Image (tube, helix red, strand yellow):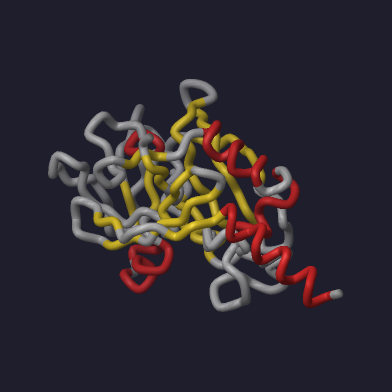
Length: 220
């Protein structure tokens, strides 16, 4: 009975998920893709340091640099300015970079909107369970207990942390934050948040000058 049930679950998930091609951004960083309920996403966080027209996205390499007083800061960072984090966790961007008209996703792709994330959550039995199905399994990157930790979708969400506007990096290994391309107000935009001790995919709002990870979705 258990074996039959396992086979049925595998067939069902195979019908939902289908791995696609390798994609490159303007910096020649490589990404894998995954299709969930007809929508194709990058499986990794964005790593690019240039806009699609070749312009460099600003950054800072010192811990005494604050962007708190800037009206619309457009910056990107590697967590704690340490290159060892780049390939695994990608870069952290302010919202103003995310919505810049020069674009940061690979050609033919765009930053996922709040609606895109909501549709993804709905396909995975709702927001309260979606995080567990999206998070990378095990404890290599997530702190224990990494509740849910099924990664049935192959989305492989990681706890990339954040950069606060006061030039503080925190929560790597504990929380994953992702921008959506959807704003709430002049200073705040929608995000998604996953925690090591929860299986939710939380819909939250954060200040646009925070540095968060980005996932791209194919621009159908």
